[in-house]
Amino acid sequence: LAFTGVSHTYLINDKTYLKSYVSGAATQLESIYNIPDESDNLYNVYNNDFIKTDFKVASTINFKGNAKNKFKAGFIFSRLGYDMNANDWSFQTDQLEPTVDQKGNSYALQSFVSWKYRFNEELEMVSGLHYLHFLLNNSVSIEPRLALKWQFLKNQSIEAGFGIHSKTESIAIYLGEQQQPDGSFTNPNTSLG
Image (cartoon, rainbow, N blue to C red; front, side, top):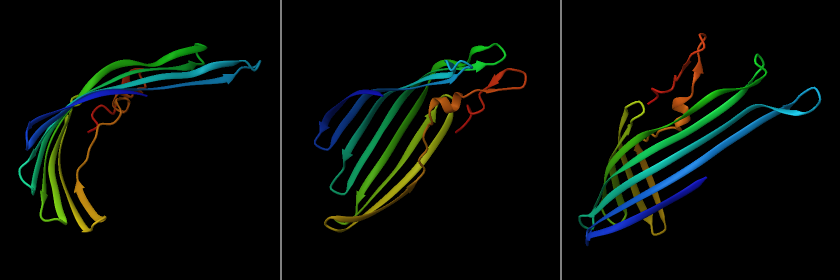
């Protein structure tokens, strides 16, 4: 796992500021499976190497209207990359055969708005709307959200919230291949929402 990022906060005025960041992350999963032959020498019957990358650019504007009202709005742009390789032993050809060899990327666009309202010192509400557009299959999700917090003692509170929270899965889930009887491959999960 590797991660790096940089953030920047820009004070527009005493009630408004802009916070932005750029980040990058990468993970690698590698596996090798060996079995013994008749002479107890190990030979490789399966191996895979999966590298997943995530590059993000995001920015949020924060505005404090007064002591009771705070507003946020922002966006997140993500580039989701992948490089997948897998090899399986073929007993027909008596050698390792590539079963997956794919690389590429896709993108996700997100935007959001939220409003935090403080009724009094003990009760506050946060409401918002989140938008997610996954460009690999053009799926779109519009997600309302609402939360309440009751601070009934100085150091104790109860919170409740509801909303729709979707996310994109690992790019490998969408691009996993399935071999058909005729030998061709399909990607049955590409259209998952």
